[in-house]
Amino acid sequence: MDIQTKQNLSQPSSFRIDKYLVNDIRGFNVQVRLQEEQDRMRDGGAYDCDDRLVRNIIYSIANDYEHSLFNFGQLDPARFAKQWNYDAGYLRHRVENPYQLTHMTQDEIAAYRQRLRENNGCGDSQDGRVWDTQLENALYILSSRPISFERYGEFAAAGGEGKESVEVKSHATFTLLSGLSAIRRERGKTIYTYTLNENFEKNLTRYYIRGEVGSLISLRSCGLDSLYLYLVNLKNNLGLAHKHATTPGELPDMDYLCRLADISFTTKDGGPVPEKTRKYQLMRALERIDRETDLDMTVTWVGDGGEGLYSSRGAYVPVIDFGAASAVTTDTSWGYGKNAAEGERTAIQRQLITKSFLDMYKKLFTVGSYMFVDPADFNRWALDGSCNRKEKETALRLALIGIFHELPKNEDAIIRSFFRTIGSGAPADFSQAISSFSI
Image (cartoon, rainbow, N blue to C red; front, side, top):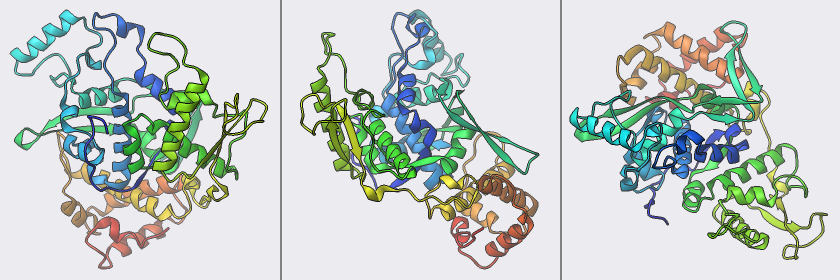
């Protein structure tokens, strides 16, 4: 366990994450680390970036979206550290070259920091602060550095307000977070609020794969989380195609897997790392992932022509087999839910309705700066069918569009049935109260 980690607390075992990101996770990692020419212009060189921390923030956001909607849109450093096995002191540690200041020279940075000190923290940045702790720097990168995806689905209204369309673009570029703010609370505690990219958020219920929280935490410290998610996605893609093993000559090749595993291709003195050394390191990485996850995979090695055995000399083509039981069964009876594993429809439906009601509650009752929703207050409001009935019907219709891709023809009957459900003496928790409601 590295210096950044400490004992983890119990939490949900799995979460959904946007499949488009995992489809191109190697490209995403490269872009986060990428040092553009203008970033190198200053004396201090390129900006600092803990790319593993950046990835873990994305995992945390996806986890909150599924399991902790009341915390969605805010990041509490203490809670993040406990859930994702980070040392709180590491997250508070200041980086020398934060991304926010990459457009400045060293002299300009020194002068800027001096102005902040003289003006009690008020400077030239949008909110008068330098985002320069490890955690803040990673958040700032996610909110200001656009990421490009080779293929990405973008959602838009179609045919009026009752339908939603998605266009899969060959290239899409956007920032994952917007509206990033630091909020000072009691006893000097700071939390961070954000808005997640709308398309990324929608794909957490429409086009996604499942990741295991414990596996990501275990594999993060050795840089194997990206390789793990790639393998989860590979297993899912094979299962959808009614296959369970890769084919020699197709992806993944050894070099691609090595890059995902952060295996170096050059030695410290600049020479090439022998292919057999990289193969051995990759074998160790794959064995660790198999040991610490539920992927249940077998890896064999063949030659370029398909010949060879696991230990044969010259066998550098990996064949990954997840077993005949890895076929994926999907529910094709509802909208974009065809991407959901069978049995998840009710859970996603309940989540979308709850999120839509939460958004409406915030729109109605939060004014000015970010205000935090009290779960008890929300539940009382959401379960009162007579209070803000028109707004609640609007929230339900928005959820139905998310579920079905369009408003169903029997929407009025669905709405009446829904409000009968929440008025039937159900539990005091809104999400539990609608667990028996199925469309």
